Amino acid sequence: MKTIDIFADLKGNAYPGRGIVIGQSQDGRHAVTAYFIMGRSVNSRNRVFVAEGENLRTQAHDPALLTDPSLVIYYPVRAYSGGLIVTNGDQTDTIYQRLGQDGEPGSCFVDALRTRTFEPDPPIFTPRISGILELQGGYSYRLSILKGGETRDGAPAALRQFFDYEPVPGVGHFIHTYQGDGDPVPSFAGEPKAVAIPSDIESFTASLWESLNQDNKVSLFVRYIDLETGAAETRIVNKNQ
Image (cartoon, rainbow, N blue to C red):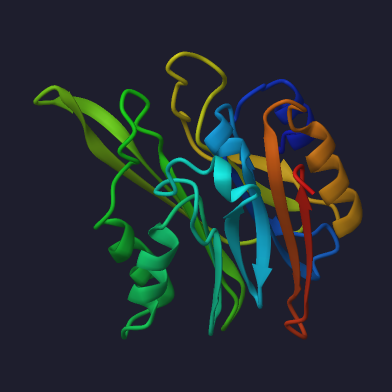
């Protein structure tokens, strides 16, 4: 499978927005996920990632500078009994709640996201990107993007896309909210990008962080989960330390 260099891809994009990577380490031993956030406004940049058990939440670095928490404060990562949910918004909780009902995780993931749409931030209409790692009964993962499609009654209609993957050692898939900087910023287009995933969490974390635009990067989360034991290693990097 042909992969792109995710580090070069990020270095060539001043504003990919928020991004999710899910895949398998080169040695085949780990399920891998990464999530990063970027920001151009004071409200967006005024954040840090905070671990809460196996979960991850965003938090205002300086509460006095928080003007609107609705789209910036949420749980990007929630663990469930069979795996992990990773998203760029409060749809994490929609998926998590649906998984608490009967049903196969992949179906619950799709059903939950069919009830959601892109973010209410015109004129951008930021896509909601989501992923799920299913670790029981053999590792697999899915990604989704909910974005604006054709215009209807003066506003974009929802376009919901889902991608289902069988893991390949050393390969991951990368999806992000924006194609690049702009006014308004253009939404991500096409399928998630196939990228190379190394075996070492330290080098992957450091290289991702160094590749993000210095002015716009805010926080990064990386987790490697041992597919045999279930043990997890997590790294969190915050620009606002």
